[in-house]
Image: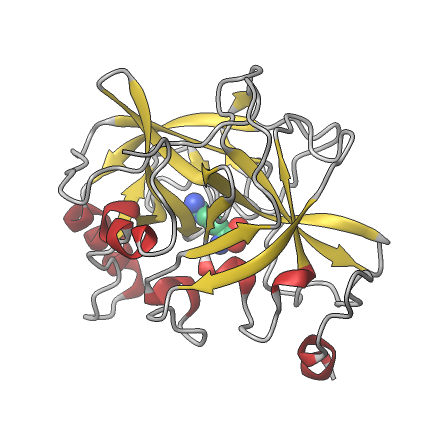
Length: 280
Ligand code: ARG
Protein backbone atom coordinates (compact mmCIF):
# COMPACT_ATOMS: atom_id res chain seq x y z
CA UNK A 1 0.00 0.00 0.00
CA UNK A 2 2.75 2.32 1.03
CA UNK A 3 4.66 1.35 -2.07
CA UNK A 4 1.67 2.13 -4.22
CA UNK A 5 1.44 5.59 -2.79
CA UNK A 6 5.13 6.15 -3.12
CA UNK A 7 5.13 4.98 -6.70
CA UNK A 8 2.50 7.51 -7.77
CA UNK A 9 4.04 10.09 -10.01
CA UNK A 10 3.96 13.59 -8.66
CA UNK A 11 1.30 15.83 -10.10
CA UNK A 12 2.65 19.00 -11.60
CA UNK A 13 2.56 21.79 -9.13
CA UNK A 14 0.33 20.11 -6.56
CA UNK A 15 1.44 18.99 -3.16
CA UNK A 16 2.59 15.38 -3.35
CA UNK A 17 0.41 13.16 -1.22
CA UNK A 18 3.25 11.17 0.14
CA UNK A 19 2.98 9.36 3.46
CA UNK A 20 5.14 9.86 6.49
CA UNK A 21 8.52 8.22 6.35
CA UNK A 22 8.28 4.59 7.48
CA UNK A 23 8.20 4.04 11.21
CA UNK A 24 11.47 2.68 12.48
CA UNK A 25 13.25 4.80 9.97
CA UNK A 26 13.18 8.03 11.92
CA UNK A 27 15.00 10.56 9.91
CA UNK A 28 13.92 13.32 12.19
CA UNK A 29 20.36 15.53 16.59
CA UNK A 30 23.13 16.79 17.74
CA UNK A 31 24.22 15.46 21.11
CA UNK A 32 26.12 17.74 23.48
CA UNK A 33 25.82 20.76 21.23
CA UNK A 34 24.88 24.38 21.54
CA UNK A 35 22.87 26.87 19.49
CA UNK A 36 24.47 28.07 16.30
CA UNK A 37 25.03 31.79 16.04
CA UNK A 38 24.01 33.52 12.82
CA UNK A 39 26.22 33.17 9.77
CA UNK A 40 28.44 30.44 11.19
CA UNK A 41 27.25 27.53 9.04
CA UNK A 42 25.43 29.21 6.10
CA UNK A 43 25.54 26.03 4.00
CA UNK A 44 23.27 24.04 6.33
CA UNK A 45 19.94 23.13 4.74
CA UNK A 46 16.84 21.26 5.92
CA UNK A 47 15.41 18.60 3.65
CA UNK A 48 11.60 18.42 3.83
CA UNK A 49 9.05 15.78 3.01
CA UNK A 50 5.31 16.40 3.05
CA UNK A 51 3.52 14.86 6.02
CA UNK A 52 -0.18 14.31 5.48
CA UNK A 53 -0.62 13.75 9.18
CA UNK A 54 0.88 17.12 10.10
CA UNK A 55 -0.21 18.91 6.92
CA UNK A 56 3.26 20.31 6.76
CA UNK A 57 6.57 19.99 4.98
CA UNK A 58 8.47 18.26 7.79
CA UNK A 59 12.20 18.16 8.35
CA UNK A 60 13.51 14.69 7.55
CA UNK A 61 17.24 15.23 7.12
CA UNK A 62 20.01 17.77 6.88
CA UNK A 63 22.04 18.64 3.82
CA UNK A 64 24.60 21.16 2.65
CA UNK A 65 24.72 23.70 -0.11
CA UNK A 66 27.81 22.88 -2.20
CA UNK A 67 26.87 25.21 -5.07
CA UNK A 68 24.03 27.80 -5.21
CA UNK A 69 21.86 25.25 -7.02
CA UNK A 70 23.07 21.92 -5.54
CA UNK A 71 22.66 20.19 -2.20
CA UNK A 72 24.69 17.26 -0.91
CA UNK A 73 22.80 14.88 1.40
CA UNK A 74 22.70 11.20 2.34
CA UNK A 75 21.26 8.67 -0.10
CA UNK A 76 19.28 7.03 2.71
CA UNK A 77 17.43 10.35 3.16
CA UNK A 78 15.88 10.03 -0.28
CA UNK A 79 15.03 6.35 -0.27
CA UNK A 80 13.16 4.44 -1.50
CA UNK A 81 14.33 5.10 -5.02
CA UNK A 82 10.73 5.45 -6.21
CA UNK A 83 10.48 8.81 -4.46
CA UNK A 84 10.67 11.53 -7.03
CA UNK A 85 12.27 14.92 -6.77
CA UNK A 86 8.90 16.63 -6.41
CA UNK A 87 8.28 14.81 -3.11
CA UNK A 88 10.98 16.98 -1.52
CA UNK A 89 11.65 20.60 -0.69
CA UNK A 90 14.76 22.31 0.65
CA UNK A 91 14.98 25.16 3.14
CA UNK A 92 18.16 27.25 3.07
CA UNK A 93 19.36 29.93 5.45
CA UNK A 94 17.36 28.94 8.52
CA UNK A 95 18.58 28.93 12.12
CA UNK A 96 15.28 28.01 13.75
CA UNK A 97 13.62 25.22 11.88
CA UNK A 98 10.19 26.18 10.42
CA UNK A 99 10.76 29.87 11.17
CA UNK A 100 9.31 31.69 8.12
CA UNK A 101 9.76 28.79 5.74
CA UNK A 102 10.52 29.66 2.13
CA UNK A 103 10.94 26.32 0.50
CA UNK A 104 12.70 25.58 -2.76
CA UNK A 105 11.64 22.76 -5.06
CA UNK A 106 13.97 19.93 -5.92
CA UNK A 107 14.07 19.17 -9.64
CA UNK A 108 16.49 16.25 -9.71
CA UNK A 109 17.77 13.63 -7.29
CA UNK A 110 21.02 11.85 -8.13
CA UNK A 111 21.61 8.90 -5.82
CA UNK A 112 25.04 7.33 -5.81
CA UNK A 113 24.75 4.24 -8.02
CA UNK A 114 26.60 2.11 -5.43
CA UNK A 115 24.18 2.92 -2.63
CA UNK A 116 22.41 -0.31 -1.74
CA UNK A 117 18.85 0.18 -0.55
CA UNK A 118 18.70 -3.03 1.41
CA UNK A 119 21.99 -2.48 3.24
CA UNK A 120 21.06 1.21 3.64
CA UNK A 121 23.60 3.57 5.24
CA UNK A 122 25.77 0.71 6.55
CA UNK A 123 26.39 -0.44 3.00
CA UNK A 124 28.29 2.75 2.16
CA UNK A 125 28.03 5.19 -0.77
CA UNK A 126 25.47 7.04 1.34
CA UNK A 127 25.51 10.21 -0.75
CA UNK A 128 23.01 11.92 -3.02
CA UNK A 129 22.80 15.20 -4.88
CA UNK A 130 19.72 17.39 -5.13
CA UNK A 131 19.39 19.94 -7.87
CA UNK A 132 17.30 22.94 -6.86
CA UNK A 133 14.75 24.56 -9.13
CA UNK A 134 16.67 27.83 -9.02
CA UNK A 135 19.95 28.90 -7.50
CA UNK A 136 19.64 30.09 -3.93
CA UNK A 137 20.14 33.78 -3.38
CA UNK A 138 23.44 34.03 -1.57
CA UNK A 139 23.84 36.19 1.50
CA UNK A 140 25.56 36.11 4.88
CA UNK A 141 23.06 33.42 5.81
CA UNK A 142 23.17 31.35 2.64
CA UNK A 143 26.49 30.27 1.22
CA UNK A 144 28.01 27.08 -0.21
CA UNK A 145 30.72 25.13 1.62
CA UNK A 146 33.93 23.96 -0.09
CA UNK A 147 34.62 20.35 -0.89
CA UNK A 148 38.05 18.88 -0.18
CA UNK A 149 40.45 17.69 -2.86
CA UNK A 150 40.23 13.90 -3.23
CA UNK A 151 43.74 13.50 -1.80
CA UNK A 152 42.96 15.23 1.49
CA UNK A 153 43.65 12.97 4.50
CA UNK A 154 41.63 13.77 7.59
CA UNK A 155 43.89 13.07 10.56
CA UNK A 156 42.51 11.19 13.56
CA UNK A 157 42.24 13.49 16.56
CA UNK A 158 41.48 16.56 14.47
CA UNK A 159 38.50 18.57 15.75
CA UNK A 160 35.67 19.15 13.29
CA UNK A 161 32.05 20.29 13.59
CA UNK A 162 28.71 18.72 12.84
CA UNK A 163 25.42 20.60 12.70
CA UNK A 164 21.74 19.78 12.55
CA UNK A 165 18.23 19.79 13.95
CA UNK A 166 18.24 16.14 14.92
CA UNK A 167 17.78 14.47 18.31
CA UNK A 168 19.71 15.91 21.24
CA UNK A 169 20.03 12.49 22.88
CA UNK A 170 19.17 9.03 21.74
CA UNK A 171 15.38 9.14 21.17
CA UNK A 172 15.04 12.69 22.53
CA UNK A 173 13.99 15.20 19.85
CA UNK A 174 15.21 18.78 19.73
CA UNK A 175 12.44 20.88 21.38
CA UNK A 176 10.85 24.03 19.87
CA UNK A 177 11.89 26.59 18.73
CA UNK A 178 14.27 24.10 17.11
CA UNK A 179 17.50 26.10 17.09
CA UNK A 180 20.18 24.67 14.79
CA UNK A 181 22.76 22.84 16.91
CA UNK A 182 26.52 22.53 16.47
CA UNK A 183 29.01 20.31 18.25
CA UNK A 184 32.74 19.78 17.85
CA UNK A 185 33.75 16.19 17.43
CA UNK A 186 37.15 14.51 17.18
CA UNK A 187 37.93 12.47 14.06
CA UNK A 188 38.42 8.79 14.90
CA UNK A 189 40.59 6.64 12.63
CA UNK A 190 38.80 3.95 10.62
CA UNK A 191 40.74 1.13 12.31
CA UNK A 192 39.89 2.24 15.83
CA UNK A 193 36.34 2.91 14.84
CA UNK A 194 35.99 -0.45 13.11
CA UNK A 195 37.43 -2.21 16.15
CA UNK A 196 34.90 -0.53 18.40
CA UNK A 197 31.97 -1.52 16.25
CA UNK A 198 33.37 -5.00 15.66
CA UNK A 199 33.83 -5.75 19.35
CA UNK A 200 30.16 -5.27 19.76
CA UNK A 201 28.80 -6.81 16.60
CA UNK A 202 31.08 -9.83 16.98
CA UNK A 203 31.04 -10.35 13.23
CA UNK A 204 34.24 -10.64 11.20
CA UNK A 205 32.78 -8.51 8.42
CA UNK A 206 34.19 -5.12 7.67
CA UNK A 207 31.85 -2.68 9.38
CA UNK A 208 33.59 0.62 8.72
CA UNK A 209 34.34 0.80 5.04
CA UNK A 210 36.99 2.92 3.37
CA UNK A 211 34.39 5.33 2.11
CA UNK A 212 33.26 6.04 5.68
CA UNK A 213 34.73 8.36 8.28
CA UNK A 214 34.13 8.28 12.05
CA UNK A 215 33.91 11.18 14.46
CA UNK A 216 32.63 11.77 17.97
CA UNK A 217 33.17 10.76 21.55
CA UNK A 218 31.09 10.25 24.65
CA UNK A 219 28.38 12.90 24.73
CA UNK A 220 29.38 14.53 21.44
CA UNK A 221 27.81 13.20 18.29
CA UNK A 222 25.22 13.60 15.62
CA UNK A 223 21.95 11.71 16.01
CA UNK A 224 18.66 10.79 14.27
CA UNK A 225 17.49 13.68 12.10
CA UNK A 226 21.01 14.97 11.47
CA UNK A 227 21.52 12.54 8.61
CA UNK A 228 22.58 14.08 5.35
CA UNK A 229 24.03 17.07 7.18
CA UNK A 230 27.61 18.25 6.96
CA UNK A 231 30.70 17.41 9.03
CA UNK A 232 33.10 20.31 8.41
CA UNK A 233 36.70 21.02 9.42
CA UNK A 234 38.89 24.10 9.30
CA UNK A 235 41.65 23.90 6.73
CA UNK A 236 43.97 26.85 6.04
CA UNK A 237 41.44 29.23 7.53
CA UNK A 238 38.49 27.99 5.50
CA UNK A 239 35.77 25.43 6.09
CA UNK A 240 35.79 22.18 4.18
CA UNK A 241 33.10 19.50 4.26
CA UNK A 242 34.70 16.13 4.98
CA UNK A 243 31.65 14.06 5.94
CA UNK A 244 27.91 13.52 5.46
CA UNK A 245 26.01 12.29 8.55
CA UNK A 246 25.18 8.67 7.80
CA UNK A 247 24.72 6.23 10.71
CA UNK A 248 25.77 5.15 14.18
CA UNK A 249 24.74 2.95 17.09
CA UNK A 250 22.91 5.04 19.68
CA UNK A 251 24.10 8.65 19.89
CA UNK A 252 27.00 10.02 21.88
CA UNK A 253 27.72 6.54 23.24
CA UNK A 254 31.32 6.07 24.43
CA UNK A 255 31.77 2.85 22.44
CA UNK A 256 30.35 4.07 19.15
CA UNK A 257 31.49 7.14 17.22
CA UNK A 258 29.17 8.58 14.58
CA UNK A 259 29.76 7.32 11.06
CA UNK A 260 29.87 9.67 8.05
CA UNK A 261 30.14 9.23 4.32
CA UNK A 262 33.73 10.26 3.50
CA UNK A 263 33.45 13.18 1.08
CA UNK A 264 36.96 12.72 -0.41
CA UNK A 265 35.79 9.30 -1.70
CA UNK A 266 33.00 10.98 -3.65
CA UNK A 267 34.34 14.35 -4.85
CA UNK A 268 35.12 13.10 -8.33
CA UNK A 269 31.61 11.64 -8.61
CA UNK A 270 30.13 14.93 -7.34
CA UNK A 271 32.19 16.94 -9.83
CA UNK A 272 30.59 15.04 -12.71
CA UNK A 273 27.37 16.88 -11.92
CA UNK A 274 28.13 19.92 -9.83
CA UNK A 275 30.25 22.76 -11.21
CA UNK A 276 32.91 24.19 -8.97
CA UNK A 277 31.84 27.19 -6.98
CA UNK A 278 33.27 29.71 -7.25
CA UNK A 279 34.39 28.65 -10.72
CA UNK A 280 38.04 28.11 -11.58
N1 ARG B 1 20.77 7.62 10.45
C1 ARG B 1 20.52 8.80 11.19
C2 ARG B 1 19.52 9.68 10.47
O1 ARG B 1 18.88 9.19 9.57
C3 ARG B 1 21.80 9.49 11.60
C4 ARG B 1 22.37 8.78 12.75
C5 ARG B 1 23.68 9.31 13.18
N2 ARG B 1 23.97 8.61 14.39
C6 ARG B 1 25.02 8.84 15.16
N3 ARG B 1 25.13 8.19 16.28
N4 ARG B 1 25.91 9.72 14.80
O2 ARG B 1 19.23 10.79 10.89
